Length: 570
Image 1 (cartoon, rainbow, N blue to C red):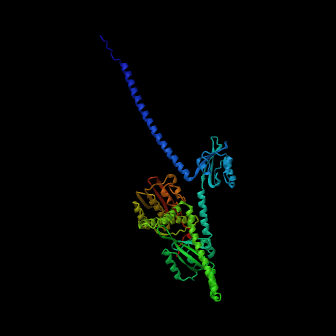
Image 2 (cartoon, helix red, strand yellow):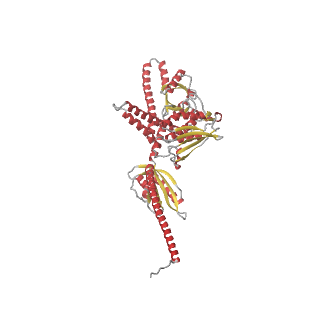
Image 3 (tube, helix red, strand yellow):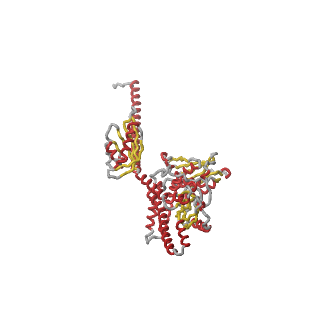
């Protein structure tokens, strides 16, 4: 007979506990597997991000020509990054001795760099210097070298960290600008620039030398202060008819110096156009021909010397023509200097020359010919816009900007800018609108209308340029003592670390964006200067990839010195 065992309660309980523990361990095991997978995925993402960061760092190094260096006080060698090695022309990983590193500097800079490093080592004094070095190939290169002392836990300096940047291109641009400025300043002929009303905005030293007026007395004044009442009114009427029609005028003036003396000038006056073909300024180039005129008078008195004097006059006339052509060539050289100054002018110039060459193809169709002509026209307008920006920023830095305060209807300014930029926005398929227009009686303020329009134009132009789809909205609010304007877009946005830099000269939000190369980076710096001139401030709020909103304020009661306000007729 088989014996049957009865279940043991305690054994059953232990088995149940073991089963529960098994299930718990199984759950924990599954969680560990999932966690391990998650960590692997995160690690993979981090590796990709690291590679992207390394790629971006390599791009920055190549574009900015910058590298880092370290000097440990207890070691003879100086550690150079690959970027520094590239600048000096040595293999990557090269670590020179301290004395060897100093030897790379041009002889006239060696004492200075040693002094800066010594002061940094001994006194913790950071340095930021611009010097010349000599690479292994013998090439002289301008560099910017920065050094900063690093202390250990005991507060003792144990190394210097620094950076090294090739600034040869910037130095070359500065030298070209200096030459351009000197060419105009030292010109043997009088050169001055006026606005469309004829008010003088710039005059070179030759103007002051000939007329006897100071620069302060000329800026904002009209050239009619030179009028001696000797030149027929018909000459001025013809002059204005010619230049306002977009053509150059050539002729003579019988003018008066500040001291009352009369003098003669041979003049050429020509209009300057913006990219839209609108006249923005007039350029006058004048030659003092008083001596020539005196000789002509002497010829009338002496009939016996008439033939001789006529030949002499013809010779002098030819010399004057050569001088005039040299003056015009000097003006063309200004564009050449600017062309060498930056990529921004070389690009449209290449477009003009390239497509002009294509136009010489005898088999070119009419449609392609028109297409090429439009490219040439667009490139020329772009180059003129850059030059105008450079002239404006030069006037701002020289303190030559005039402010004309008058009662201004802000709504009219808003509508004018809307009508001007609406077609351009429509071409890109953007929604373009104005918001927050206040009643007429609330928006008549005393300010400079032209500068308000210039500020709005700069901001709207950028908004359209960097917005491929979506909306652009602009308007203003009454803040009591000032008006707060805004221009909002749904464009590419601006990185947070670039939002202050964009208001500096030659700076754009993203130098790697292909659209950023279509401008010299002066528009926002000019707008900022105008805003501050009118007693306001400008700033931006932006999120990269979502858009930007530019704000600026304009004081309703700006405090402008009376001698900066001019309103005269040429």
